Image (cartoon, rainbow, N blue to C red; front, side, top):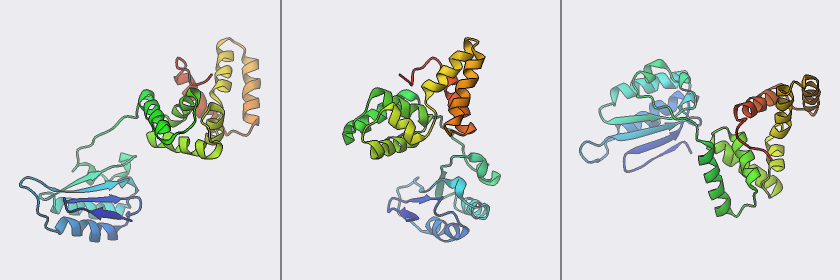
Length: 220
């Protein structure tokens, strides 16, 4: 389903699905042209989720539609990478940037979901999900669901098996060896970790997160 227009004057579209110029010319422009009975001072609203997935041609067509119908319609574009939105559209919009959620916010929501869905978990398992999510609530919920579907129980071991990331405890040991000046031991343990099949990107990414959160415990 590309989207749905409501009698309240709101059109919602997932731009990753409705990303072509025809959608802009027909569905979006058609909605902007339609007359909707709204209270004085109210405007129709077009919401485009994942707008950065739209083609350049579609964005150019959208720019023209925004110019023509700005007096009756407001446009809200949600995207992950704002630089993929063409400059003419960016100049016509007020850009609002949202930071990632804090670990505490994600952890609280995960506990709420686990309680509501009666999911078996350990505190260490939820902390592991928070570690892998990096502030992304959707990523956290996806990892929670995948771990529950695969193992039926949320703990650290199961989470890192599903997410296929090096265990932070192992990486923390390598960092501790480096701090203690045990370079040879650190190199040996790093080579052993690499030998288990993890890519360089996986190892470096986990190493970065471990070092960044050295004063927080996401491992037992």
